[in-house]
Image (cartoon, rainbow, N blue to C red; front, side):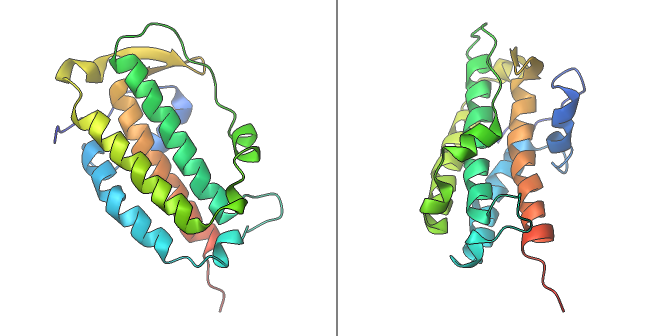
Length: 176
């Protein structure tokens, strides 16, 4: 796999460094590959009953969080594809609350969301693994923010790390 260096602050809007900074080291592709096995293994440890839990009345259920992870990975990777292929048009914003409201995530099993994660991540990895070297530096605009393809690989990995940490820290907290 190609070793990537972490993006600098010209490669993504400042907000997205919340995710970029979640990636340890300089290898976003390695992180994406590791998550391809670790994330489903972690999620399979959550029961169907637990997956309907929300830690506060106004928060998403675990199933909705996993649905959001899948949707957002598709979005970030589509942006990476668009920019890597040299398409010049800016891409629109994504409203996660509208998307989750129409996803019917709680009508599906957690297992189906995990299976979807597996498929989405396999496609993510294949796209990034096959990019020509010059594509990583290509730039575009989405949601009014600049992005490089390299930054989007980091964002995809960091977004999953961010939400898995929230699941561990807020949803699956054991009280004594």
